[in-house]
Image 1 (cartoon, rainbow, N blue to C red):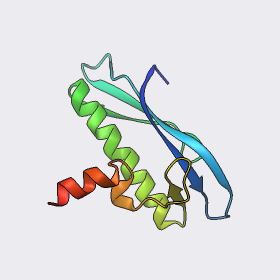
Image 2: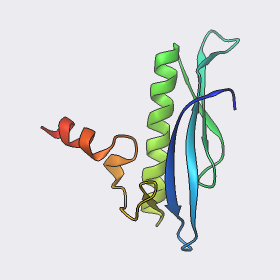
Image 3: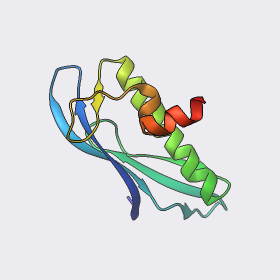
Amino acid sequence: MKEAIVERELLVSNPEGDKFETKIQFSKPHKTERKGWLCDLVMDGIDKPRYAAGADSLQAILLTISLAESILINRSEQGWRFFYPDSEEQMQPDEFILWPETVKMHKK
């Protein structure tokens, strides 16, 4: 991965019941030779490294965030559980990227 610019820490429980701490990391968007932009995504223990491409750096990072959320939702449908760091409080799918306070603001 190129330089990680943001990350989210999670406590994860896979379908077998193994619990572990991990980070979801997003790289600084970088230009490609084809005039596009890429943003790398690393979700250790959850999925293989991936990336999303965009027409500019903003689109690349927004698409990568959307990709991360889709992967987490898919995993939760497969029996994975995700918890807030240092907590036994389980995250709901609409809280994977936005914190609960932000979700509540968006729903008003």
